[in-house]
Length: 165
Image (tube, rainbow, N blue to C red; front, top):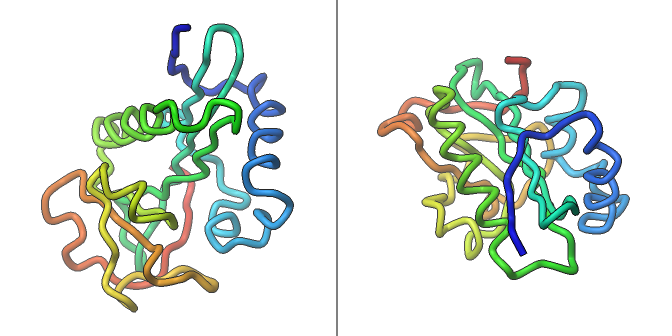
């Protein structure tokens, strides 16, 4: 079976919403990362879907963010993969492609709230506690960043806020 990555379209929204509900449940709406993204559209050239033959099996989005008022960052999420095909590398492919496109779009760094064992393979590392914060509770060990441009994290301090790009 062939796996293909495509840009997300408006027609993909119902299937992606269903996958997110399966993966994260109703509690996703109160998570801090979700609240940061709320009301701000994702960066369209970085909103990707994964297709296995004619079935949508995954997706990833990135939202432009400011850190302490400074632009240049993106927040990765959500990343969602159909539970029926988890562990086959589709999420890895979506993240890898998304990071490459984020770099090409001029983003200097990408942040996320996630698991280091999974995201470490992409170069993500924990942020020093208190350096960058979210406007709500987050386990500091799960706030991760990867520089797409050397030195992009230097001088970045403060709270994360989404902004349209």
